[in-house]
Image (cartoon, rainbow, N blue to C red):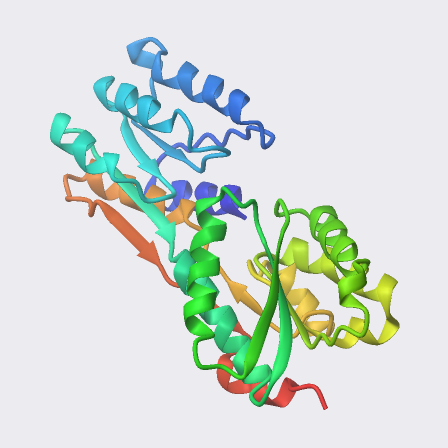
Length: 280
């Protein structure tokens, strides 16, 4: 969807957009970006829009890009962007990102709407060193303050279904979970929610009907899982590449670009409709 969004924005704005995938390989992505930054001047792009596999090394690449006159738009916020702007004020530098704290807060509101009286919940987060995962967790914990639902445990995955399935299955095998009451599992993305569902089904059939909440809300992913009844709710995140290409187009017309643009998220189903989905 990010790639399709970028291409559509290119057609809309008259910019030629080349989409390059790194195969989730951080080293490969560094090499790809390096080749664009250090290409002969006539072959350099006017702008680079990057969604990082890993943020390590990106500051140096961004600085080299702007020194080469290439606009840099990244899909996460970083303090070094302001300094880059100051160093090369004529080269556009910006970030476009999703409010990850709000993702966690919306998940908390979803859980509170589905379990308004009481409950016991687990949360499966992304990698423990991921800023995205930590921001979502922070937003979730703040959103749960004063709730009757108790967060019993935070488990770690790596955004994949298999990682969540393994983490949840391992936890549920512990002796300390004998007689464990469980009402809900919140996962920081829909892929991990799918894996969590597999682990619950394999442990106890009745647990497959627990409240299960995800995030991303892709049409053929989380949204479909909600409509099929496999998820109680998900958080829909907007794509960021289209907005980034639009920003590049505006700067090409001489319009100023905000340093940071933060896009909001929405609940699916809407929060006001979740009461109808409360477990009986």
